[in-house]
Length: 245
Image (cartoon, rainbow, N blue to C red; front, side):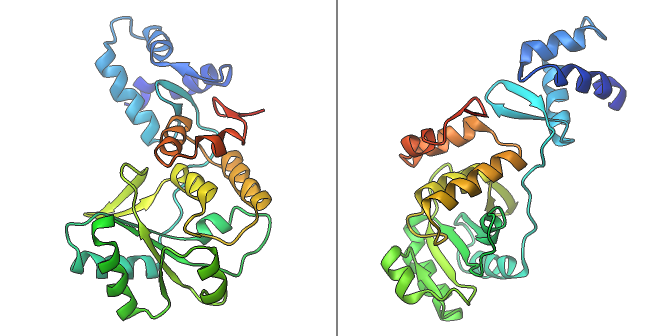
């Protein structure tokens, strides 16, 4: 498969382009095999994406992956919470992540690190009370006032909130998921309930750092922003086709 992918030639080809289409890739591979069918090309695209050689910044477009993929390591606390939730709610989808996945993208050092647990709205209250029985510093969808008064910056608090339908996620195990970077960007734009107590300017810095450092699927980003009714906030970042203006 490695020889069939013509990776070196493909990298040279993609370095000269901003984005290429499926047809562009088919034309490229027809240099080496004029009879290559589209079905085989789709398998090659899948293999190239799995190897981290290309990524899809928008639907139907591909580019050389010169940035890192966003796959931060899970923590023991995340997996501990996941095990509890899987035992209590074995058929309910949930997502877990620590806020330092976001905070680490800042130009400042944040002492605060919360664990965000997102779960189907139908069991939101039940999940909150269940986790609060095990961890006293568990909070349900805090607004700014609750955050300021009750949530300690010195503790690793657990914030339970709803998981929105069709949120961009990575599947970890059965009903256990973690968020994709596109989801974190949109959620940080909204920050309601409060995920991280930051200023608007610092939020912009974190998002721009994320886009500079990691491969972003801008179609996924725009689609999730639309679902969360935050297109206008996203547009203020002046991102068009994956380029900052």
